[in-house]
Length: 292
Ligand code: 5RP
Image (cartoon, rainbow, N blue to C red; front, side):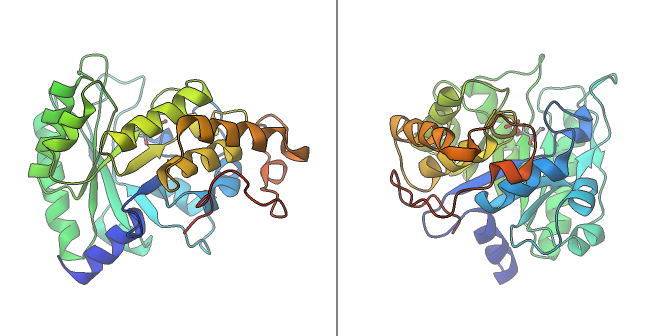
């Protein structure tokens, strides 16, 4: 593996503990203004320093992410369908490699829709994207899309993840499921778990914990962070599991402690200043809650 590729991968999956905490804010590429992500700039600002990388589209990166950030960008380069269109699986690569380089992408992300009408197109696109990206030392993260008509069990997800890896994806993002270990064992590249629909905070922490225990290197979480009433507190709690090996009880206690503390005890109104961490208070619960 070339130096550039290794270096970029190490920005996503931290070599200190081989773990990754990605914040996903790319939902608008087919959902438009998703609930609580209507104003991406305000959502991203207070969270950026707590994630290892940000999964984002080029439009949101250019308009809503400060170019001065040190946080690596995982650039979504696929799209072409919308939630009200005929078929969500009809995606193409929408961003050129040149533009991805201009945006200083640390990795490129695209979805494959195994078992859908357009599976051929999306799988071939993945192979082609890997070939292009490898020329420039840029890793590719393949997202195994799920949908009403697609499965979400270990059998389906193993198939989809393995196909992504066979096409050369360097990281695969998928969903947690029963017998998740099987999915991990049959996929030769690191797996990152998507958060999925908003669930209670403790359940999202359990999902994070189960994913890591099951062999994932981390999570790429969106809605369960920024749709929480307390996004900063939530990402910090998730971080204690991903990078601090907290148990679910420890992480949830930490979340509740942060929420109960002083002026931050405000619901999520997407107001960054209200959610700023209190730098003066020491972390009494877990180590490794700050970004490495
Ligand atoms: C959509 C995506 C999202 O980034 C992914 O679903 C993660 O976000 P969430 O945790 O909200 O599910 O890739 O295709």
